[in-house]
Amino acid sequence: MNVMRTKSVEQSIRDTEEPGHQLRKHLGALDLTVFGIGVIIGTGIFVLTGKAAGIQAGPAVALSFVVAGIACGLAAVCYAEFASTVPVAGSAYTFSYATLGEVIAWIIGWDLILELALGAATVAVGWSEYFAIVYKAVFSSEPPTWLVGTHHDFAAAAIVLILTAVICIGIKVSARVNSVIVAIKVGIVLFVIVAGLFFIKSGNYHPFVPPSGTKGAPGPAAEPSLLQDLGFGAGTFGLSGIFTGAALVFFAFIGFDIVATAAEETKKPQRDLPIGIIASLTICTALYVAVSLVVTGMVKFDKMNIKAPLATAFEQVGHPNFGTVVSIGALAGLTTVMMILMLGQSRVFFAMSRDRLLPTVFSAVSPRFGTPIRTSILTGVVVAALAFYFSLGTLADLVNIGTLFAFILVSIAVMVLRRKEPDLERSFRVPAVNIIAPLAVLASFYLMLNLPTKTWLRFAIWMVIGLAIYFLYGQRNSRLNANRPGGIDSRDEFIRDRDAAAG
Image (cartoon, rainbow, N blue to C red; front, top):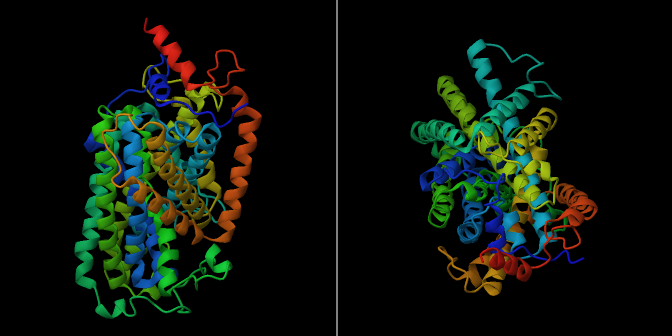
């Protein structure tokens, strides 16, 4: 059986028109841009900035954001071409299916589960940390242990389940909720930038790039990266610290690729998807660099609170009330991140189920709400369980390596599709694709090398489990399996059937 069989672009688009599997089209360019901002601005800026600055890069964390932003920008244009050409739910999974074959599509789909589900759980844990700050400010006491404990986090699980209900109601409601909260979140980020300017001390920027061996902020030390274990680079602080910091704050940029998962629910995907992807990434990069410069100017990097850096920065300069405002904004901001990550996960799961690589029971669309309600509920329950039991650091590194791997495959796939389908209509094309796409691959792989060795081992185990599921279930039940009744083995056979049906 040929596991490298591909699913044609035409067939992918036709599948979106099947009765019972159609998603409703409600989104425009502004909706997509706001979705992108809603999911990008979150844990990375409100939480991980402190860890990257405090124990990895110092004030040079601003350069870490620039490095991560460049890597994402290279991949973003590849996503933009694919999403506008193949406007089908599933993002990188769907793109890989049309170019690199079914087994690679499965791998990337399984990888996206790692990115989106674990990403949502990571954000939920970060949300809970800010929730504890707000709770203490309001009630002048720590939250009860049953709500936020050492080995359990009921608050994180609860917010996930509430957002699951919002996602099930429909994409239009989700978009409206997201728009309101994004306005609050961006307002808080701008507040941090403007208010923080008055508390900057130039001495806090020295040294801008702390030398290797510098003692960092209180808290657990950073794990050595794979490059460091291989004998390359010093790891934290110094020039290498900028790149290990970039590998961590890369999590802050996860989101523009989520815009691509909403392709099937976009009114004019050929025009609106590239706008949404590129605009959201550009806006957020500018905000990230500004915030990181302000917060490291307010508080010396080795005195920074690595769990809630923005809120505690104002407390450390004598304005705890400002810190409470930031914490409330962070709660709002992280809420939309969770919602959109789970929305993206449910759409990838839906696309894989529609292709019968996962049980078809999950590809049903609610006739009332027009959403894949079963995959949405399953996603919410799994994410809530992960957030209840696991810590922030373990989850964040796994999410990063999964996303970077997706970037690599999409960047390769866009070059493959250019060769396979040179005449395919493309409303957006990657400029200098033979330069940009390989650079995206190299940049993403280099950031992967800057992640801890343990993260690579966990990622390898996850991939082995995924391949076992594919060969035991997905390969046999695949929609393209000619040995399955009603299966389609090739693009040519699909086109013949399509033309015959047309008369």
